[in-house]
Every structure is written in C-alpha cells, then in structure tokens.
Length: 245
Image 1 (cartoon, one colour):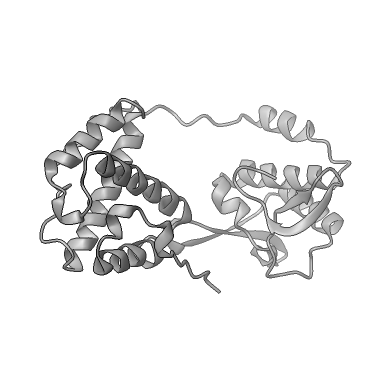
Image 2 (cartoon, rainbow, N blue to C red):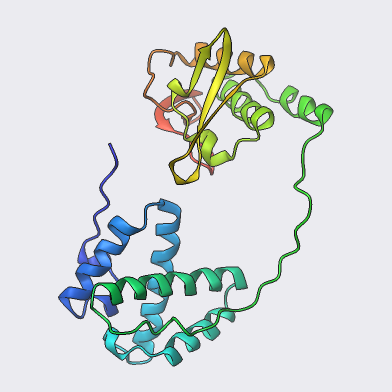
C-alpha cells in the first residue's frame, strides 16, 4: 500500500500559510504532485529557504512575490550553495508557483522569467570495474557475518546487473526468482518501470547464500536487503537505505 503523505500546517513555510487556499494548495503539492521522497525533501528545503528569504525582506503573502524577489533569492543562494543546488531550488519554485497558478491562488508565476545559473558539466566515460577488480572487491568482503553476506549479494547484484543502488535496495524477496531453471532478478526503476534479467551463476550463489543465512525465503513481500541491528549482526525487517545500515 502506498504511504499517504500528510503535511500539517505547522510544517509549511510561513509565507504559504497566510491564506487558507495557499496553505491547502501547498499541502496538495507535496502530498500528491511530488511522488519521489528524495525530490520532495529537496523541494521542501527549497521552499523553506525561499520562505525565510521572503520573511527577511518583509514579504508575508504570495501575492507580494515578484520576479525581482525570486532573482534576488537566486543571487543570495549562489553565495552559499553550488550552481546545481541553486538550479534545483529555482526549478522547485517554478513548479510550485505553476501549481499555485493552476489552482488560481496566483495569477502569474513570478519565477517563470527568472534565469538560473549556467552550469556546464563535462561528460566522461562512466567508470566500470574490470573483471579482476570486481573479483578482488567481492573477495575482500568478510562473509563470516550475515551483514557481510548481505553486502556481497548487494555489491554482486550491482556488479553483474549494473543496477542503480536505489533499484537494488528497493528489491523485495520475490524479485529474485527462478524461471526456466535460471535465476532472474526484477529491478524497479524510475517512473514505475520494471526490468527483469537473468542472473550470472556467481550472482545466483551470492543471493542464495544470503537468503539461506538470513532466513527470508518465505517472506516474499519483505525487503530483500535489510538493515542490521547494532553490532549483533542480526538483520531487521526494514529495508536497507541508500546510505547503508
């Protein structure tokens, strides 16, 4: 079941609570329009920063916001943050103000005409582990513990399938299965897409040994990669986060 995201009024920046219709529209923006939790966190920080900027300059209602205020906010942000961060925060404001315009809270989007900072990024070749480097990495993992078996299975999954860490840690136990006498993994990618692929025999061994040691074979709907409880080495029922655990 999808978790319902509810934001109470105390969690909303003050400039967006001046009017009930703005408060309701703001709540709906973060509760229903922004689905990705990482994006939601980043956008909320952008809005929080902008609200603080407005408070410092005596702007207490959304109707008072003009393009010049958004542009000044961008300039102030550039003194403290990287260009990619500032571009993301400006994008968050544009999207939110568009949402307000559609909801008839505002007549125009004050962030629409504001240009973000230029940011050129050189694109190089994505570094890829060579076969011997991958073997060395996997062989260096201590598999005498349950977290070690988990880590080898996780890293092995990413090495053999090139899976994103986000897709890997979001796997359920049922996402590793046998089909036609071969092991398969099902990865949940961005945009709700699913990608299934056969597994290498080494990866089969890593995944099977981890499942047996963890005793999670019957918990088909449970998370595949789980956090560890303290130093005990015992795994919890919670999914491993991208930051580890």
